[in-house]
Image 1 (tube, rainbow, N blue to C red):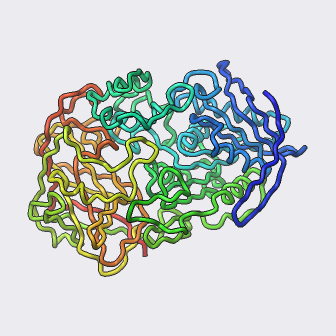
Image 2 (image 1 turned 90 degrees about the vertical axis):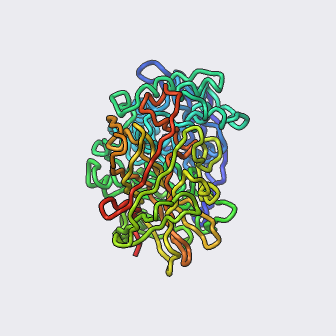
Image 3 (image 1 turned 45 degrees about the horizontal axis):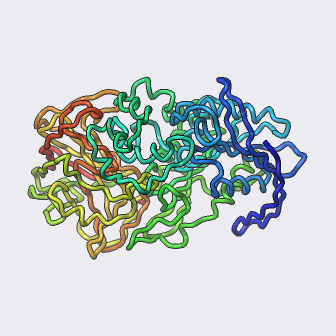
Length: 565
């Protein structure tokens, strides 16, 4: 361990131009109660005053350019910033077991910080993705000095984002990335070939390695006690902390941010905490405040905001007690209108529920079929649409092959040429229509399989046929009534399944169409259901399922959403 002093110029757009001396203590070792040392660096503003601290922990190597910039940014604005490798990664001792040790380690680190001579006893936590979820796992243990959090693109509890009962294929690219002590190169591997390996438990064999936690995780295919240590979204009543929640409409873990914000507003353990939640949702992917676009879609320069100022103000308010106005409680970006909207809360009070009903003459298969979305039950053309789902020929989900960003505003019209994709479209809109809130599909289904999946996707269809993905979701049949148990289908019996397609904030422009796409696979985003009802990790012999979507006055399958007034 040694100490150096550096001068850092931090430019905070439109707010500060600060020159401030920073002291850095590198290679600090903090011993956990089980004898393991966690290692990191502490960035201090040069001052003799006692100061608050911000704790950041990462499995991605603390010395990256972005993490050092964060360290310098916060330290130059009056905070001690602790930039640490998590257990088993980088320079920290122990074995990396994703998430399972993080709650207790965070609790003990906050306790250590509060006892240091330079600490004023106020501690905040900060980070994105893995570094966000582990804040929640710490907060539920109620560390007494935890005073504020900034949670960015936080993953949810097991089986929330991916209700499939097993690790999905793309999780393996992440697990390989963080195997061992340092980051692995994931870009030279033929991931498509590996993702297709059956049975799913053998997928790591394609990498020529064993991943012990992969083997253990896939044994627990319901929400049993095994997962309890890494759950937090059922325990907001234990958390008494102001939280700034940040995500994007195209963040592949977006749903966690909305669950966390609503959970804290409704269930947090004190009025002080309930009243001090703030949420920002941009038109971004998993890397926030960064333009996400396709060849045709771009959300304009307004999407980039001064998040540095917002983050600094948040911690100054709650760690220093400064009287800083944080503006609206909720700030969301409306895509295609391409502007920001300030709201008093979420869900927005001006969003009204609406429905469109599925209709066809029995041939909604593909882009060239006759599937429609109609506004009245009386306009439904009664019948059913059938398609075959072959797990060896799954419907593609458009994405890069690694888990850094799963999907975006991609064009699905080429995918919709397949007969195993049902396509239901509205008529061209007479006026602009803004959707803001949660999106669901309520389907009445039949299948000849013991188990199968149903995937739904909401799209904006442009006049030239470009079909822009907005949001999507899925239900695995055996878990349709909850992830804590299984219920298999009976052959050709009608079942109602409700598919959570997450949230969107999007303006459908005049002459565009609203589209609902239905299939039984979205590969490799989700693991393939082999339709047999057998063990999901050990089964390797798929069968083809004949699946049906019913639409009638008795079985009014529909798309439900919230229209912003």
